[in-house]
Image (cartoon, rainbow, N blue to C red):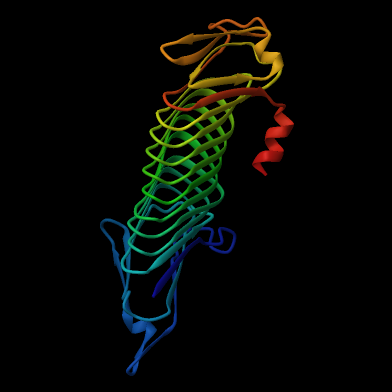
Length: 311
């Protein structure tokens, strides 16, 4: 199994940023050293460094130490895994098959990570326009992403992100559970059959699932459109939120602070609650929650309580 680590060159020790170090660890056997299984080639014209390791070699590890502002294009076959830490570049492109990928404190104009069978994890903050895609039952676990646009998806595995700060985001899964700690900006979150949990949101939030449940907190600066066909929807809001709400489901439930300002009516076999919260209007903020065949509930919750739930 091949394991590759990419890390920055010490800028104080090498002020010219004109060195690259390749360290190889492992045993190959049959009188062939691990170093013999790695090819390193530098092209003067394109100024590209190519490092190729034999993924069939057992327990082979390659450590690549390069200037911090280096574009990265990493391809791993078989079970080979990749770790990139503390790097800055215009492009960070990683592709794995069954191997895992870990990004730690990466800053790039474009971060693109794809895996057909491995997990993807993010530690620290990932800065840039981010695209993270996995297949099969692989999972995505990210601490924080920050940039202009975000696109993250899994097929059947869970997708967990503690914080997303972006102008626009798309998060989706076929059947995996999606859990987002905080999401800021314009966001579309979708899952076909998985549940969706959002502990805090600020911005324009749209959430849709066919058969999963939705649990979302909408903050003072947010609007939300939540829709499930076969599941249930639970909406949490601050007690001081000024908004216009419309809840529609087989049953609709709201706590006393919300119920006293709004009205519940019956329409086509469904319960519909509409009205203002704290005298709010559609210009202030609006929340629409619809469950075609399930229940919808809304309750007030303090921001501090959301922190305890998301921890």
